[in-house]
Image (cartoon, rainbow, N blue to C red):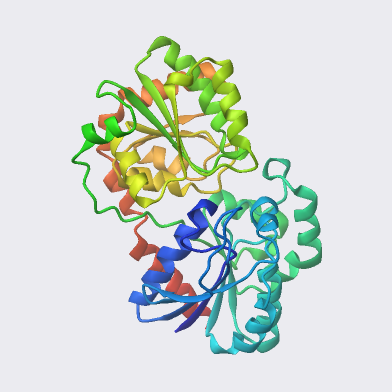
Length: 390
C-alpha cells in the first residue's frame, strides 16, 4: 500500500511535541509492514531554525519537506504556509492509495483534502488536539473561522476520523452526531524503551542532584496549557515540608513562558530546588527518566499525553491532572495518582507526596499498562482502517 502522511512538522523537530513522535514511529512501523510511506511536511525545526534537507529517507520513510514562508509564523502562530506544496500534491496525489492527514487546523489539510476529493483518493483525519475552539486552547477566533470556511468540508469528506480517547469522540459528536460511524478511537502508541538505567548515581551528579534528593520530572513544552505554573506552586508547598525534593523542568520554551515560570520560582524563593534542563532529545529523556522518581503533568487540557506513556515505559509512575486525556485509564491500571483540582496547590502537593511514597508499588504496574499501547498493536489497528476504506 502506498501511503502519504501529511503533517506540518516531522522528525527531528521534537519540540513540536507528541504528533511528531507518533507520526515518526507509525511511519517506520508501516514500512515494516511492507508499505511505502511518504511524509509530506515542512522545513520547521523550531521557531529559530529550519531543516536543510528538502528530500531524504529516514529508516525507509521518504520525507519531502516544503519551505515555510515564515518560520516564525509557523512556530508562534501555528500558521504553516509551505511553498510548492499545493503544486506537488496536485501532481502526486494519485500516486497514493490513501492519504493520512495529521492535526486539523492546517493549510496542508485544506489543500490535501481538496485534491483527494477531486481525484478520488480516500483520506483519513487524525486529530492530535482538541477539536473545538475553546478559550483554553487559544486562538479561538482563528479556529472558528477555519472551521467555518474549511474544517466542515475536511471533516465531511474524510473516510475516517481518528481520535485519541472516548472523551475526544464525545467532543467531536457534539459538533455533528452524524459522524458516529466515521470516528475510530486510536490511542497513541507507547514508545519502545530498550535502554537500561545502570548509572543512576553518576547521572544524578551530572544534573547536580544528590542520592537523597526526591526528584519530580516535568517533561513538556513550556506553555500555559501544560500547567507547569500550577506544578511549581504545588511543588513550593511540598518543598517547604521536605527540602529533599527537587523539580526538573525539561522542554522547549514557547512564547517566552519560561521567564514567567522563573518569576514564580523566584517569588516562591525556591530557585535552588528547581532545575531547567532545556529541550530534551531522546538521550537526555532516557537520562531524566533514569534519575527521576515520578513524572508530574498538571495540564489544563491534554487530549492524550504521550509523555505519560514514555514515563511508564521507563517504569516511572506519574502524578496527573484529571484533565489529561489518558488519566482515567492509567489510574485504572494502578500506576498513577490523579489530581482532581490542580489549581489547589495544597491538595496537589499532597498528591505529589503520595505519588512519591507509592512510587515502588506503582512502578510494578507500569509494564502491564504500557503493553496495551504497543506500537505494533496500534499500527495493526490503523492498517485495518486503511484496508476498509481503500
